[in-house]
Image 1 (cartoon, protein in one colour):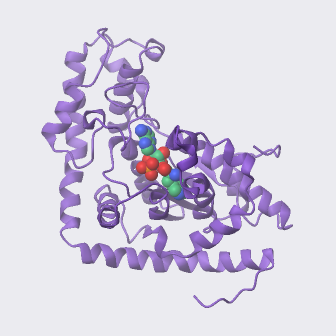
Image 2 (cartoon, rainbow, N blue to C red; image 1 turned 45 degrees about the horizontal axis):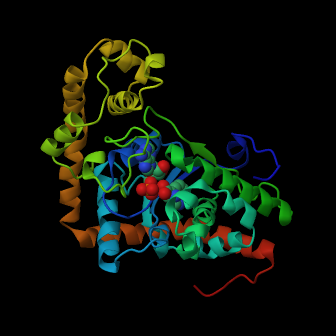
Image 3 (tube, rainbow, N blue to C red; image 1 turned 120 degrees about the horizontal axis):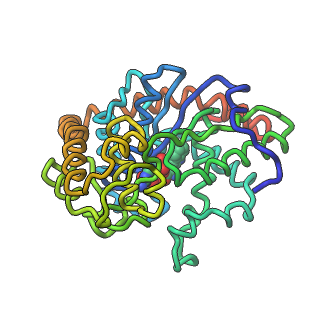
Length: 353
Ligand code: AMP
Ligand code: TRP
């Protein structure tokens, strides 16, 4: 991107620790979202090492067409899923992006900082826009700029995400660096660190080990949804594509076996252990033995989440109250940062809100 060197760890040196991440309310959460992101959100919340903000990024969701009534439902469902996974509105700020104006305000300023050449390199835009690029929304193209605004509106220092967001985090750091340079305010925006950790930062489709598990895959058998019941979870794992060989005795033996590697990674992440440990335990096992063990583990860890989600969803007014409260607390952090940003750019502050 820019030629400016960026160093991991710089944010921690310049700003107090603050964790921010976001998930799009575009339908059910799946196992990839859980293991790649939300499970880590909960751990970082419970570490208690600084504020944690978790956002439902509805403005990102509408970069592709969303049915309005369904979008509203998806926002509440995602809030329920967050809480069912262990996010606690007393410990973290849980809120909805469009309810805090700072995101859109800083997003516009960053549209004027980011360069077209930088966005042209974003692989997720190319994937999402596909062949029909001329017809993609301008919002989809600018999506990573709004993501930078989400993070930097809070001067966040740590961002837990799945592997697929790494390039967007690099862009965020480039935008922060350019803003700080252009307006002569070194260290105003931190260079946030991506936290891409765990045994399953890139969970693959259960039907095709070369594609990531995704909400948009036409086949429901390709993913485990957090709302799936025990039977569905077990059936999807039983039918997951694999090769005919037994599990190897070491990780190197998985190098050319994407489906096997994926199931081992899922097992490791669900069991809070490493892929090495799983391979050591199941060396030489056939999938006929490994899959039932994985299915039992997945049911044990995931099925209580669906039950808790239903309980939260039974009281939508309470969800709305929690999100309203979260938005107020989020705005209280972001507004002074936006005011300072306006000041640096030369825009007038003290706007009516
Ligand atoms: P999204 O649903 O695209 O908003 O993604 C929410 C979070 O889940 C992001 O941090 C993604 O990186 C993560 N994520 C999405 N799909 C996967 C996957 N297949 N494996 C691991 N992480 C994922
Ligand atoms: N782009 C992220 C995704 O699709 C979602 C997101 C939006 C996000 N804003 C963010 C993630 C800020 C982390 C921080 O998964």
